[in-house]
Structure formats: C-alpha cells, structure tokens
Length: 216
Image (tube, one colour):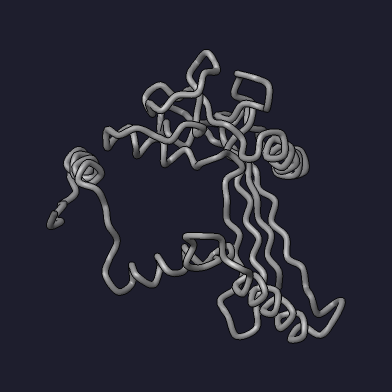
C-alpha cells in the first residue's frame, strides 16, 4: 500500500505575511513501496524545521540558522530562546500545504484545529492536545499490477540517484535515505544523546522516583 499520514499541532507557525502563529508544524508523511529497495518515505514538518530542534538548541545553548524562526516582532532571529513562532517551508507554498493539512486533519477529522490544540510542550494541568489526523492507504493493485508499480517506483529512484551531481556533491539522495542510514548506524553503534538532555532525563527520573543509571 501507499501510506499517507498528516496531522495538526498547536499553533506555532505564522502564515506567510503574518507575525501571528496560526498553524502547527503540521507534519506530512508519504510512504511508497519500491521493488528491491527500502520504501520511499517522505516525512517532514511543513515548517522550515521541527520545533524540537529549536527546543534542543535552546537547551544546548547554541544558535540556530537564520530562517528557522522569528521573534515576537516578526524579525528573523538566530537565538532559539527568542523564537516565538516558526516559518513555513518554501514561503507561501509551505503555507498552502500546511493549510491543506489543517483542513483535512481538523475539519474533516472533527478535531481541534491548531489555534485550539493544546501544546505538546506543556504536559499536565488539564492540557488537552486534541490534535487531529488524516491517515490514508492507496492500493496500487486496484489500478495496475502492484509489482510493476513497485518496480516503476524503484526505477524512478534509480534515475534520481543517477542524476548529474553538482560540484562538491558526492551523492544525490532521495527522501528517507538519510534517516534509513541514521537508523542503521544507531542499530550498530547506539543513539547519541547530548549531556544536557541526559541531565534533564535524570532530573525527571529523580522527581518521579525512578532509578536512572546511564553512563555518560
């Protein structure tokens, strides 16, 4: 099957031309089977960057690239602590994609829209996220031979991989490849977690009375 999944999130992204957060990072994921290969997997936020990367930069005490977020006055900032809202990817194009996701995942799903959704970052105290989802599956076999479809997808991927590389580029990648390689490396070598995050987890464990024994 071809899988399609999308969701709303609490408002933290401003529409193009606005400085008021109205949309969530409203992620989109599309998975397509490819013959003899890992499936093509597009998994992305519709903001320039996921909010978690802003939060992590603030915790680790380093700047973020210009273009990730803006301050309360709508001015681009590289200080993660000053970010009040994020920006949609691709300007008005990302805004349009995010808005379409909003309509399918809140109105059609009869769930909270981004303006009414509770924050992922504020647990407890009666916070209810109430976010909505749109999940779909498309059966290629209803249209054509599913194996031929998967072979066609694999051929498209091969064409992208064989595209002429720009100067200084070693390899042309397709969506899902970097994440698959990170996954395989993590299975072999483990997952890197920064010291500041480990300390935060230890603090939470102490607060909850849970043993925490992790070598740093």
